[in-house]
Length: 66
Image 1 (cartoon, helix red, strand yellow):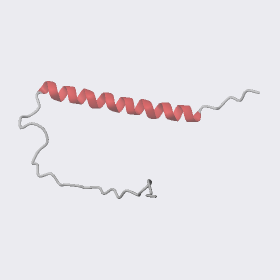
Image 2 (image 1 turned 30 degrees about the vertical axis):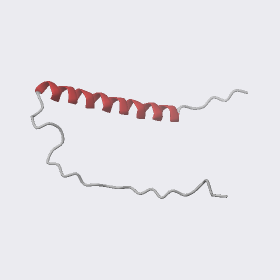
Image 3 (image 1 turned 180 degrees about the vertical axis):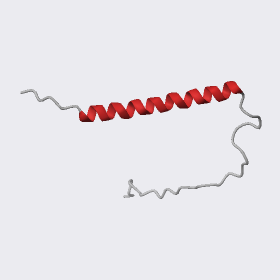
Image 4 (image 1 turned 45 degrees about the horizontal axis):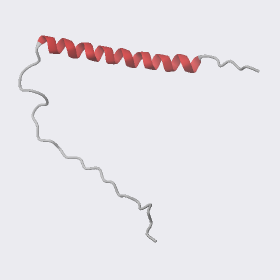
């Protein structure tokens, strides 16, 4: 009977891309720069809130009911 749980050798293939830039050839417009800036600010705030929530939750004393 064949072993149905064969080990699978998975190899990671890394290929170096030959690119000089990522994105379009044009510079970002002021609106695009502002949109990206706001996006990263919101992402950072969300990350900080998540970490704060974890820390506050970890330090709260647990109540034991009898």
